[in-house]
Amino acid sequence: MVPKLFASNVSPAVRSTLMTIKALGIDVEIIPVNMSIGEHLRPDYLKMNPMHTVPTLKDDECVIYDSHAINIYLIEKYQQNTDLYPRDAAKRAIVHQRLFLEAGIIFPRNADIVRSILKEGAKTVNKEKAAKVIEGYNFLETILETSEYAAGDKMTIADFSLVATVTSANVLVPIAANRYPKISEWITKMEQLPYYKEANAKTKKTTTPIHKRRQQLHWFVYRHD
Image (tube, rainbow, N blue to C red; front, side, top):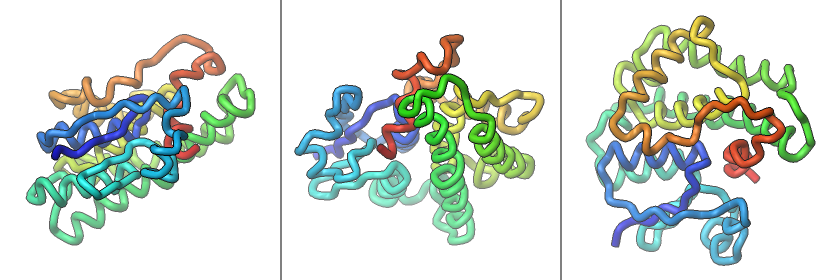
């Protein structure tokens, strides 16, 4: 039986897992979850994932939620010998650190901005909140000054998580190429992946005022709320 991924590709977390699946060449059944009508809050979904987040992976009797855990699981089970998640302890620790950078700093700081717009009625991006996102960009820019990818000279699952979140964050807190040349080069490099456009396609810029982008902005709330 093929694994099932419950997903909504408006979520950066989902898109990181889709890139992992494509990179590994795994056959996975994608089951859409329409979060705008509350499918993630239905009893059957809550029984499977009490955190009511996406993505959720069901592989036989094993159920995993959180994209980072899912991506690691898919590699450990289906393709252990891959540079996407190196077996060397030191290299793997660096991958973990970069995943924590995304999960603990960049993603939640962007989520804070999105919540202020969707739930608190903000019509512009708060400067203090934007400054915290920019600090996250600065961390990543510094990392990329000394390596081709987020965790070294080879692409890893850390790149998938970071690029999905950073390109989404770019909608609210733009990444200027002259200020962040390394991030810009890295994004361009990731965009050349044959599966990138299909897996990470929900990050288009728009001239629509921020407070009217409700459908576009829901991705950051969906992972935590």
